[in-house]
Amino acid sequence: MSGILVFVEQRDGSIRKGSLEALSEAHRHAAANGWDVAAVLPGSGIEGVAAGLGAYGAGKVFIADDANLKLYSAEGYAEAVVAAAKQMTPHAIFFSATAMGRDLAPRVAAKLGVGGLADVTGLTLEGETFVARRPVYSAKAFATVDTAGKTPQVISLRPNVFSAEEAGGSAEIVKLDGLALSIRAMVKELVSSEGGEIDVAEANIIVSGGRGLKGPENFALMRELAELLGAAVGASRAAVDAGWIDHSHQVGQTGKVVSPTLYIANGISGAIQHLAGMSSSKIIVAINKDPDAPIFKVADYGVVGDLFQVVPAMIEEIKKVKAA
Amino acid sequence: MKCIVCMTHVPDTASIIRIGADGQHIDETGIKWIVSPYDEYALEEALQLTEAKGGEVTVMTYGPQRAEAGLRECLARGAHNAVHILGGEKTLGDSFAIAKVLAAAIKDREFDVILVGVKGVGTDNSQVGQMLAELLDLPHVSNVVKVEWNDGAIVAEREVEGGHEVVESPLPAVLTAQKGLNEPRYAALKGIMAAKRKPVEKVDPSALGLDEDVLAGAEATYNLRSLELPPEKQAGKIIQGEDDPQAAAAELVKLLHEEAKAF
Image (cartoon, rainbow over all chains, first blue to last red; front, side):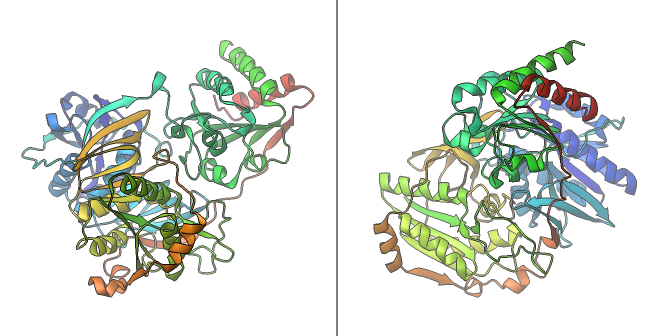
């Protein structure tokens, strides 16, 4: 046993922020215990990317560089992670709980004959045991859990919760050769959504709209505010079910559970379903004409008023602040 | 096409969650139990597929006695067969144990595809489908929002950050269903009546060669130490903006910028 292995996710050679967060969290625990941190990076033509991981605390980077790994496949990537785990025999394997990480981690865990702690928002170490805090019932409750002594401890970390910080080191590159890749389900293409919008699951700031927007055309106002703040556009289930915006924007129990720094809820009453998806946001702002709307109970700041008057005025004020 | 749909019975998404006296489980008083919403998409896909191409849908759950109501709901919507593996309280939240039980129940059955919801809206692990695929040595595609069913193969789209991945896979495979895949139907009265007469096959884990005490003991992979409610939030600063929205907006932006340092 010798430390923590971190799966690092890249698309077209760019490393996902969540992976750097996972690497940094691994480094924080490892540094306090004299453990090693290694990264495992599958892809094609990724050697140049690997070296940069040293700065985030990886002492070693296992690379699986293969044309068949250019696009993601659970089976191919799992083979690479398991090969690295066999060389390292880590205490734990960390993933960022992105779409890829959440797909891959359970496959890796089952391959290794262990379970997994998914989407954790807090981690402490007791001896060699990670104790994780994770939201359950869509963050209506939090469970404190561990892997019941099974190792490696497969853990996925919710994006945007743990901080990514440079630790200033350098990494040794180790090639994983001779992988027995047998890939049945294979990604053929990645289709980006229109306009390259920021995804709510990854955003630092989310501007969300609900039934109070009255129609699909008024999401333009949300987009204008979002663009100004570099934010993603979110939506309540009511707005999605009305067909005003695609489900990929939905925040809530049957949508995405998010933890941005700033969440601005516009015309969202705050049904329990929605609160479950965004109540762990660091700062919550509510704009709603109904002073009794439940959203105000979780809001750090709120304006009781007509969003069609308040939001345009906010946009002007933010422009002034940004210009100053 | 023979479809197996794995279903989990969970608290209604509108439920208020309270912690039970043991500090480890929810207080089930007054909880209404439903078929997990994502499993509804999995079931609907299987129903549409068999309506178009023939075949049958077997819905399966691993849960306590009350989960039979969830199976009946699926039968009422059109599932042909139901399998109830009794238990699951001791292994709650342990995705690997659940996957082992389902894999044992499925491995000797004939099927072309296994459909499950991307997650149960309970312990929210989102792991069982992928683990089941690994245990049965099958390919999987998770978070699926669209499927094109071809002979012996599929083209599926899965939702990822900022787009969709287009995935090709041979069948049999495991798919995990995301919202957007289809529009689940309601059960019609005729279906509800018919469901009452359809048999539910009851299976004890021991008949699968599994011992729940071992799954939840020596082989456990998920140890629940405690369950808590989220910390209470302090009351926020609420600005009245009905009369002067301009001033309210200015004050809000000032607070966000200077006090909260949100941007």
